[in-house]
Length: 398
Image 1: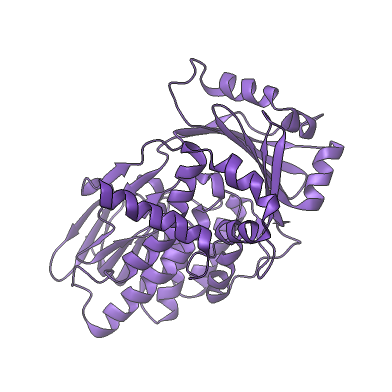
Image 2: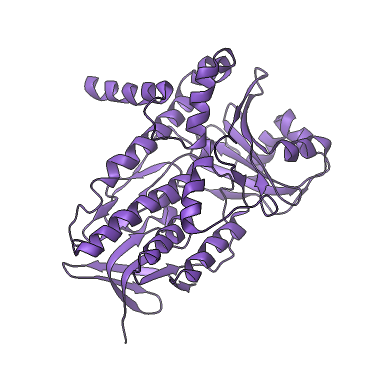
């Protein structure tokens, strides 16, 4: 069997994989991207963060309001107390809510247009790494390369192969969701505002994301899977019916699909890189989606990984196991900030003390808005510094 050889093999053609592949191809590397499904394919996770925009610009992608729903803010509502607060997110960059099938397809097409070879409906079965090469076996054939980028999403191929996946306890356990076509006046107002709504429930929270063509993405994230005996559609319908905000939005709505589910929530990959490979996107770790950080972390991580891998390939040092040693700590600042923010959201009274108290302090509101926008690598955010220093304090006393 003939073996095709490349500089880099990227496993996975989601936002992380397509971004990494495109950026490496822009540097002149021969890149193969392998995708187990075929675009366009359904994927949840439609809400973008503003600070994804610089990466999209590097990729040559221009999001347009004519194609996607504008996103101007995020509103958090505690229906138990009636409290709510909105954070504006459309400052420096304009974010969007996207239909992932179309969006992911456009990223993969863009990668191909910039020289990436794409194999679809092909599944990686095994990866063999030695001092000189990476050999990837799929259900069709074999390929070799100088380097592997694992962007296999929550499948996390290399993380599971190295037994490095570690669950983050106490965060969301699973999600139930569907899409609706809506016509209510409340829904029309939501399309005009472009806001994502987060409706806090005793069992977890509900997302409400407006999409183009009069559609809403609605999902229930369950914090504790032992909290109820109900499962699947029955659980989703119970909490949907209990939300007065959601019921107003869904007056006259038609569900486009049955209730779907996603598990494997909130894990970290303790071995995100090694000899001749690196992980990015969800393959490097997945956070509860309450702050819509998934695509943002995927493309930002892909950009930084691709930059370091390019340097290693250009200097012939790609066999070194610590190629990504400087990237890891950089990304950790942002990832840890979001992780700690999410932990506080679930485990403390932060929502009451800070979210709803932020109305009294424009500084706190702006600092929280910065985190919710993906502006994670600045040095003057006192709220972010409090999160990180609190984590260090817990480490010192452990």
